[in-house]
Image 1 (cartoon, rainbow, N blue to C red):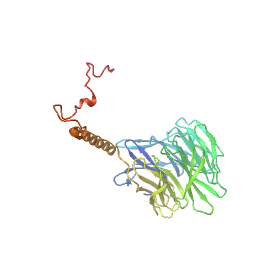
Image 2 (tube, rainbow, N blue to C red):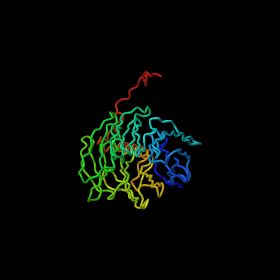
Image 3 (cartoon, helix red, strand yellow):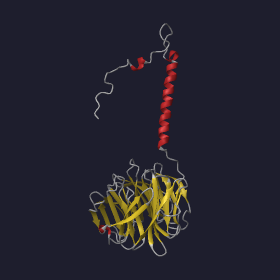
Image 4 (cartoon, one colour):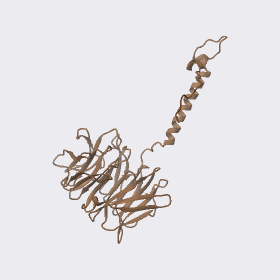
Length: 380
């Protein structure tokens, strides 16, 4: 793909259709480009569906609203630009919208929508944290000294908490409803908490963090959200991580490295189930995100651009497969009942005589009951 890719995100569309939006620095301009995704070939389209030129600055980070229609892009000009996506069968349009509350906020290293889409947060290079109610843009929290400088942030599954990390190695948790600091995660003097990501499966309320120690390999730590205490750690990527992400269903955790590798971890076992080594050789992975409709990963680096990787993880059950299994179980049960009924002489040990050789099936269910009004009173 032409140009330098600075960031990228998936866009979830209706009926399990996915697009990818990339922030690109071209030879004479910067732009946001949207590509379609082909699940058959597990690849993006060779040319964009649409390319929208950015007037000032280069893209830094992108946040996509869960509805797939609103997109915020932070730029080097110090503004966050708001766009609206309109995708029809015959055309795709990306239109700029006015967002006064996001103008002149300075360089924002992190931008994120909450899972329910009701909140939007920005984390600045200057350490300034802002949490807005969306789409009213009512300010929930405006904290100029949240961190020395933001590194990463993530919303919890219930959208109640926001976790953030700083370039100085600290990590904090904020109540996104009340706009208040909940806790600063404890760490040893030789530890740097670099990245953070909440579990998303709804059953395990954990916060994952990558921790770099002074004289040992980095580890991934797990924190209990009820107490905000560290409950364990494991060495997974075994090298400094540049990005972290969880799958939409929460089954998998992904870690991208500073030299172009990424691994996928099964959260239930906390074991690696996919490795992509030297995918972007020698380059810092800037974007890492699970596709919302397929088990594939979008990664971006400035040197190698955007790549889509099909994950070597067990396939998920499709909806039609689940219904087919239920139907098969029903048919097997019905067949078994029929066989028992036909062999009832021996099975039910009924003596052979003048009576029927099989028990009357009505005896199992009682005498049939009839009513003049079979369905009762119905209101239309």
